[in-house]
Amino acid sequence: MLTLQFVPYADIEHLGSDERIERLLNIVKGKRIVLMQGRLHPEEEALLIRQTMEQVQKEFIGIEICTIFPQERNLQFFNKMRKEMVKFLVGNRDGITLIGPASVVKEIRRDPNRLNMFTITPRIEALGKKNGNGSARKSTHKKSRRGR
Amino acid sequence: MGIYGPPNAGKTTLANKICMDWLGEKMGRVSKIPHETREVQVKESINIKSNEKEMTFNLIDTPGIATKIDYEDFVKMNMSARAAKQRAKEATKGVIDAIKWLDDVDCVVVVLDSTENPFSQVNITIIGNLAARDIPVLIVGNKTDLKKSNIRKIENAFPQYDVVGVSAEKGHNMEEFYESLFRVIKKR
Image 1 (tube, chains in turn green, blue):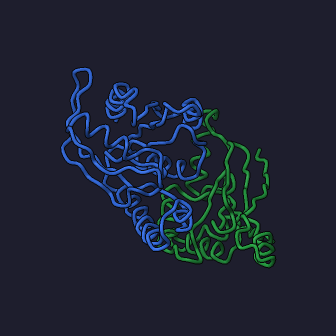
Image 2: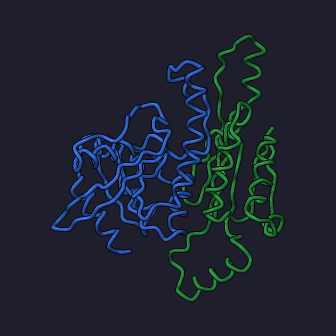
Image 3: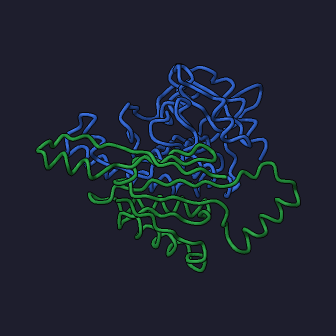
């Protein structure tokens, strides 16, 4: 069973970068997939990767992360300025961010407005072991989320 | 000038090519197994010339940035479990060091494998970080000698950046790479 935990932006907006990342990583280390409203600041994304690497061990091999957000390249100057001002005041709530444990989520492919999530199916692995087939291959299945 | 990118994109191959072109010596070892470069490598005072322009820089070749490192992936590539675990441990440290070095670069060449999907979060995170720090970026689509290479896809993914296609291994299109480098730095 896959568990997606929704994290509204309001739940993390009052936190500092370190605490914010710790909150997200704790969910992921509990083998749940974070479905976060909005996205982290690019520097926080780098910090997330850095803290993930610091915590890599046998049981936690890292994360898969993907963000999907509205394309802003065609916005007119005034609208762009207004959006930047809103982002500055209340954070970037546009789009969504998916963060999953790499032991569960094999890959998330971003195809500008669509996310394809390939997961490792533990049930089949377990079945393989139960049948004495230690070499049972990890299988993947695909979930699709359409954006705007 | 930092060279950044995901593992196995050809960062060290490009660094070697630049060093061979201007210093006559290589910078680091390359391998088909990811995370061959696990420590930041520095070559000082590289002087390059293109179209009567000249510049001198220190070249920083960084380990590939990844969000996951599983030693079992190295075992699958015929490494012993012990060597694979050691490589994984060093690779995680390499990623941390590469991110730390972002504070110390004035210009970055982001090397992407032009046969792969450019829309990966690692690519977006690296380029987003450089934009947030106002660091000039040149995107290199490497491995243009391979059939699956698609530079247009990289250009579409990052339309606001200069993109140049090269084959660092074969030395294809390096002249345009050096010209683009001067252009990007001049914009700053």
